[in-house]
Image (cartoon, rainbow over all chains, first blue to last red):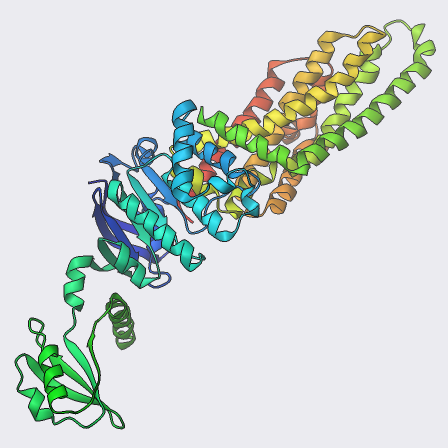
Length: 314
Length: 251
């Protein structure tokens, strides 16, 4: 295991920002951290990177205890905080070689690491410009270059795609996917489809606690369509459809238009049969779409649930 | 190694901003003017004191006051130099780069201190060129000159350490500068209190930077004064390390 965290707690005064959080991450995995604002994502990442000491708990990076041997453990870490830690008065080259030196790189290996990081993040064109004069997107890339420069085993990225344009987001996502093949990557994001597309595992944090920790594949199965939306030009005789194999119930959604929601078993998908019946009966098929529950809905359910119970308790 | 890397980065950033250059320029200009007035004064009184037995020499009349003036000017200027050391990194959120790199708190603080002290050493070297230029026309008491240089370096080391500590406390550079200035001035004048002679007066007298600095300037390099300055410097460096570590423990 590259990262192992056990029963992390973090208090700010009396406020508990992170409560009993455990996680482990292996090589080749990308873990997505999700949660509403103030859920404790950044706090957790700061603790994992040694920027914040946990109130209780253990963190091991590459089986080295981060709290006992911070220097050795941090050699295997690359961290991009929410605001990239950039010195605006330095050029990209100067900045990256400073970061490399901090990680103990020199001479040839430093030059190689620099070239590698610049190439991966597409920084060759701007390498002699001042960081302060770069656009937000390029600054973000410099921040990522800094995190992967010394090819650490563990890369922690706090909202890496914030403030980038769609093209840049796509590039950065590609880069993260590449990184995920050789390193363990931990990233936090507000953008749910991004997490769905990138990560092999998703962890939803709510009020400092782990609300969900599941691989994206399992999650996919959870959210697989179990209902269809049907819209026709003419009214449908519901009896013809309800007795179909797998159909559980049908509900009319719209009064004006002929729009129905068909709930069915997870195992069988009656869409094909429904289509042929609707066409055969000349009801005028306008739409037949599977309803997919996205991570977004799960996210909303989990985070709203907490709110409701809290309100109920109050 | 890491300490030097951090110090080098700090110095580079310092010299990339106009601040370092303007400090060097202004200090040099002011002290150059003071130096020249002192030379003029010496030329004026030279015939009168030549006849006196045990009269003060060139070094006493020109060099010692120069370093005394330098100390006062740098007391005003050094807070501006040290204010940004940590507070600016905290403000720009660049500290996390150092915190997540394999670098200890001690190395971070020592790197910052060395950068500030190295700049102060440059200032001292620039000042020392002025009395050294007198060697072209006269002879100097080089022992006394060395004592003056040591005195100024020790004093500036203490200034840097205090400024660094104030910078680790503050989130805004300006606040760090003002509080550094306050502490330095207080330590400078702390023996003004009327209790001289009594027990508490002696304690205050020991705390006063001016006392220790002046006795060094006179050419008396005693261990009491050396230890005083080293103690102040080390104390504030240790406090800075602890304060920076506190950032990690509690926020």
